Length: 124
Image (cartoon, rainbow, N blue to C red; front, side, top):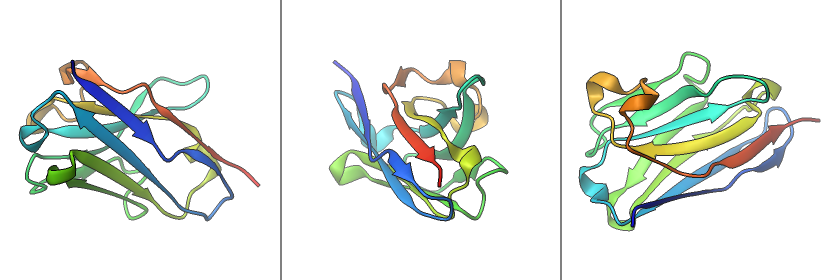
């Protein structure tokens, strides 16, 4: 059974930082293309960041470039998203996903597996 479990969400003030984690089991993580998406209240889910199996390629949404960093530890079957200088517009449920190749990293329907999400709230 494939499982993706996100953690690390919470409430943070504007300008603060959070690190999200996604632990993967039941899936060949060291060969997996992985992404982060988010869904803000009342909005559609959107792409945030992407990383290839060997960390050789990363992609970021324009809205998070320079503030968010995606990394992975294949030995620990874990992907992280370090989020700095958080803004109220970053408030959302953040999901990790597995499966989309580099040509499709923004296409949600190309991801095979999804986590349940972790909530991030940025507010003073």
